[in-house]
Image (cartoon, rainbow, N blue to C red):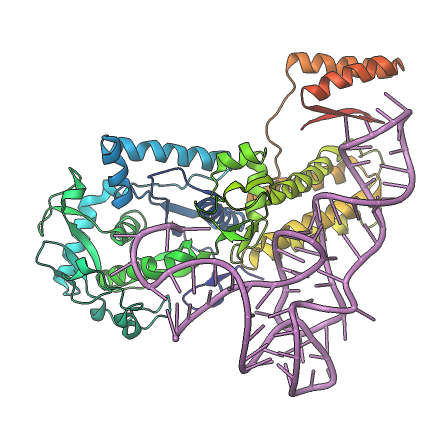
Length: 479
RNA sequence: GGCGGCAUGGCCAAGUGGUAAGGCAAGGGAUUGCAAAUCCCUGAUUCCCCGGUUCGAAUCCGGGUGCCGCCUCCA
């Protein structure tokens, strides 16, 4: 078995190939104009899964993700607040990184801002002008001529001819400068709305078009031939199609060996939208759903990345008055993680036997293989998680084992977590007061002072600490 | 109109020809001084509907219904 990844261009799973060089991985990052929402976060969690899986399988990976810090939305936001563009985008870059950190998303090796590569974008535009696949319009904008790129449409499987017709004739009035409706802007000539956001270029003062930054940044940091390029399904067209066109027209070689796209997230069975009031950020889920970021991570990675996933919500009320009363998927995540945590926590305590029971190591080996096969099969996390839960049930039925077996299971657990990033419990500790109460509770129990023990336990419960008596001592959990 | 994804037990969710993984919730039981902790057990003769192919289909083909996405800057 070897790693299979579903390639959007080929429309099938293909062998990724041997790890014979550092993997050049590029993913489309956020536009930093607001807090990202959980649908966005599903994409970043997918990139993280991809990167972690590749590394876990022995590949060396160089991961580059751009930050889009110049476009209509960032310019509008900065102008509305009367602050410099960079100040505005830095703010949302920080909130984005905070969310990623909370969700245990590994930082890409390089996270370049679009505005840090203006010279590269200008150079790429000149290159495309020189080869004749781009042209200047009267106002000083530069467009890519899709008719000059024969492969246009190969990723999204849309025919250039069909595209010419447009979607119900939605060719905007202000697009008259373009020779063809689907030609896209490489460079946008300065307009009033851009304020002071503009750069000088040989072909005119203005700012880069959206698609250009990804090609320029990929070229700059990874070279002109990527191993894998990923993004959300909505980016297939036009964004990635345009990236392919401008990149390959310039370089003459295949831009990316693999194109991976994650499906969208539904919330409460509906697409997210502000009008439906089911539009949430990570912070919203933590507050409204009373969930930890780890639980959110679990909920968002528990479905396969290429399946539409539903964050289940139970609502109360109708229409305008509708509000969420329970985030079922987060409740699921909490329960599932509790089971996994308890298993891991008790492995040592239950190592009371001089030897591992018959079949114990075979069950572990089976889980290891199942987990590995699941990840290699297009990053099938649901199957990988199932392998873990099956091991939990298998091992629990064994009753007791030896220290060596406990250590072997722990090693597997830690190894699996290099891919999942969700098994390690959130760092937590009892405060000194809580620790004192916890010890008093145990002492009272030892003295069979049940009334006293219950009183202390009630205090701990009030502080959100659940205690648990065991034959071999006592444990506590928060929440 | 074109292209694509999806429809599996109350909920989430795997499964692309060989007789329905896993999780949550629920019910039962064990354990426990008590226990919201932990453990075990139970649950779809059936995979949106109608046809078809096949020895055999959730899985393939045809038709239908519903949901989601893209068809110019939205993960």
